Length: 184
Picture (cartoon, rainbow, N blue to C red):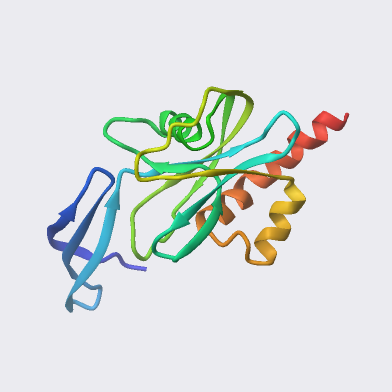
């Protein structure tokens, strides 16, 4: 496939996490058009394993979906923060826990037709409680689920957040290896 050629870019709006852009592009056919998209700094999502083997998620209200959502802790990179720093900060902010061990499981693009974002997925273990510190605009309820309960919640639509589902697909094999090694 031939790439589109960027002719110009206008940043229509921005905030600390993303920029809404409008590019004029030349298509491989030579025809010109507009492409609307969002540029981000990236994000980090954490799949935390509690000492009891259950996984920690958070329930929060999602305005765009007009309902509660159960998700793994996640957040966008701010400033010069790294993906790993963001993972640790989001885990502490949303659940109140910090990890002694944080392993990179993989990465994905949450919506490649709309944004350039790459979300890095981490598995967090050996958690220590330090107290949750949500932003003033956020409210979280901690939810602890087994791997089987997560699978069932995805199947029945209780967990409907696409990033959480993608992170579970990426981290699931690593989680299974951890569980299997603990049984040995």
